[in-house]
Length: 197
View 1 (spheres, rainbow, N blue to C red):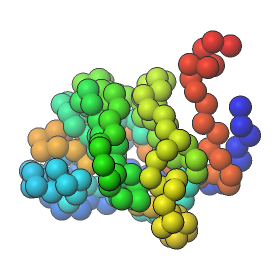
View 2 (view 1 turned 90 degrees about the vertical axis):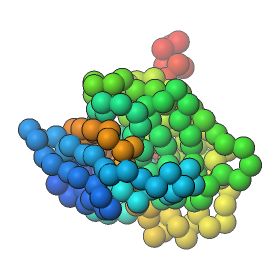
View 3 (view 1 turned 90 degrees about the horizontal axis):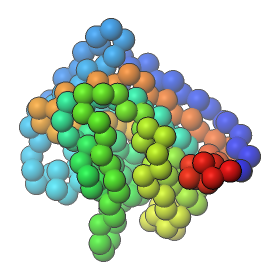
């Protein structure tokens, strides 16, 4: 297991998630309830979402994002930089944080429970990426575009915005959002390897 040194942990106050576009938010019993108006289908298929909530800061890799969330139907979108991950369907698409993939699309098992809280962990390390849902590794890659693009260093220095969105008429409840930035590595561990030990 790699040693990782925590640089900065951001436990985001849910009242600081700023709505954009026709996004509706309300805090109920300490949980952020989120819904949005209908998106333009052309924008959505191009990976552009105009209705979302945005975290107050920008974040630098390597980092780990932990979100506890509940939806009443698909789909939920977690966006970092220019990338987007969609949750709730069997095949969620992975769009790169430095820009859309060229060539064929990349998919992962993005299914989450309906009407139950799910714990989603996204790890963006400098040379690896991992998606974990409720303790199960759903995606791993050491070949993402951001890991090779020349633009990454400048983009990472500026930091990446974090946004959360949903499809029209989906009710989302967000219980917690935490972003942890690391000095050297987030220390990706393959959960199947731990189970075998």
